[in-house]
Image (tube, rainbow, N blue to C red):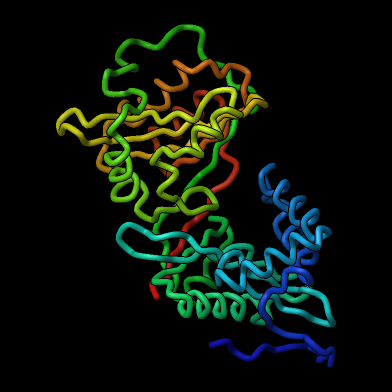
Length: 340
């Protein structure tokens, strides 16, 4: 359980210390704290989330509803704060991560933040320990979190609490993509690469959950069943896209009904596309490891678009292709998990 904290000076303020998050009271201060701690690493999506938190904190009926939902569905956007002199100086958020195909139900820990003036006092450790305890009490069989790969201090903190690294993801961006004028040789557009057809969702799920992304975590979020299986909501969402969400697949030429790779291409009307890249680690040929990206980017009209891609880190074949196409690596996140 939570260790006692060393405080330089007791404020005596009522309500100080660790306590469950109370949306109507804490949301605005949590947004301020997360922005202060993570602003250097925030992308556009992160900044948008902070703005939404600030806006939501002023809409009291909606905040009340969120607080009620948290009581009815424990763990749905819940967590803990550490207050000092009435101010939030520490935060941890806890989200349900769905049911992993083999590990069972789990939780995702996020937004572990401590004000710079209150670091190295055990606050982060206490927040995470309590979040883990809550996940266990709510029936979770595992908890996962993501941390900046170059944040040695945070990595050490989580390792000391029993978390183990299972994967590192990198995010690459190009702000105005330019497809080479000369079309690639036919060999780079193999017959094995194609848009997903009816009946291939199960094979795609097996590839992603069992081989390509066994942790079932994408960039800052858990992977869910609806990410792979089409639903009515997918069709409605597609009405608002310039180009529908596409699933490009790479067949295993030696095993029928088995896939070696998948690439999700999600576009918006603002000439921005987000790509999620999944490859079987057993695929060793460099040309084959590049084929999904090379084929999809060659066949979709994305010239001048802003592209962001998420892929497993330290893949020389994939990274050399992205560098060739003028992508820049912006961040790497290490994924860690603790079995409960």
